[in-house]
Amino acid sequence: VSVSPCCCLSSIEHSHSKAILDIQWVPDHFEVNRLGYAIENQTQKCVQLMTCAIDHEILFWDSRLEKTPLAIDKTRDMLTLPHGVPATFSGLDMKWKPFLRAHIFNDSGGDHSPTRFCIKVRDLL
Image (tube, rainbow, N blue to C red; front, side, top):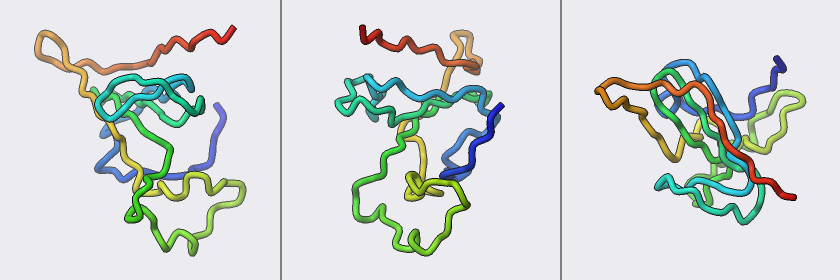
């Protein structure tokens, strides 16, 4: 298993409450909007992640920075990043939260815990 350095964190209040079982990039040809609908990704770049955990939830995360002036943290320039860690996602650090949360229920009244994602990537040939 390869280990990657941490680039940004989310606060505990907005994250999974139990162990994450799978994390996947949403394929570059679509993205999920805030209502949960899949729409075409015009940029053709992977910008969203999906995570599932034993807390019975699927969370959708966006790696793009918010465009509002209030989202800019003036103190970011004063912080130093560990050696070898790019500043690409530093603006999201401790502000990053999922834009969509789905709780998975069972028909009989219990909960389901998703364990893996399986997404068909479109064939470009």
